[in-house]
Amino acid sequence: MTWIQTLITENPMMIEITRFRRKFFGGGGNALNGIIVAICVLIYIGLVALVWNNRDSANPMILIFLQTGIVTFLGPAMLHSAIAGERERRSWDFLLVAPVTQAQIVAGKFAGAAVAILFCFGAFLLPIGIGAVAYEPYSYSYTSGPGDYSRVDYWVLFQAELMSLTWAFFVCALTIFFSARCRRGFIALGTTLAMLVVGLIVWPLLTSAAQNFRAEMNFLNFFHPFWALSMLENNRFEEHSSWAGLYGFPQIVSYSILTVFFLIWTERTVRFADNDVKFLPKQKDA
Image 1 (cartoon, rainbow, N blue to C red):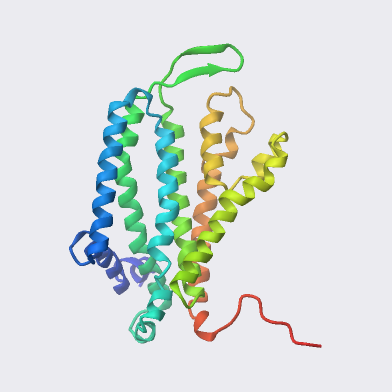
Image 2 (image 1 turned 90 degrees about the vertical axis):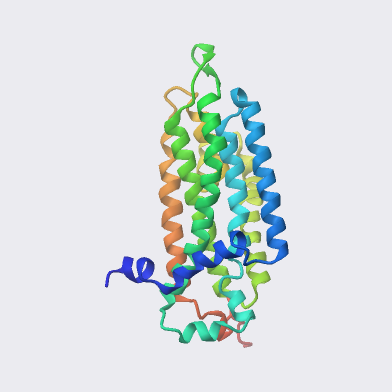
């Protein structure tokens, strides 16, 4: 049996995908979930209407920024209790003795969130598509000055969309990692959000002192998704930019590698919290 069959096609834990669908769209969730879904649908309809009414000025890159921000918090919201919640509900021991491996558990939990992320991206394709077709950016060349209205660079848009997707998968893998390492779901959620706040907000503030040194700023914020998206958009207006190759696929590959790394690490240490081992063990007194 190949690893694809073991983890995907013949994995009993893929039922997590069905559980998510029933919880939010099949009437299997509580009233609060229904209200949240209804609010999200109304917001989505309003977003599509807003983009359509302002389609000639609806920059699709701005919509990808919005999409990236949403999925950054969607991942932790869905997965913080993926494993820690099983411990709280006293169902973790039953799951461990079930005829599934630890790798299948992790893969199933991740797959449920991954499908939700893909659904979110599919919903955003409509407003992004409207912007990609109708948006008329005003071109500007640093060598020849102001230009005429140009068209959207679809190659840049494709890289930005793929970068946003791989970033979302990385956040999901990071969340399920902390969910496996913590006993309580809210602790896993707090830890994940703290890591994201430090990486996305605190770190750029600390490195802002180097804003006059472009090379240093580019390397210090290489993994920052919003920085990379903004530079990916800006570089297409700069002719012969020496930094153009630093954004796009390098981040996509990096996020993909980190996703696999944290999923493997989660599988190797999925019993971490059961053994009550600390991240930083206390030093013995001399």
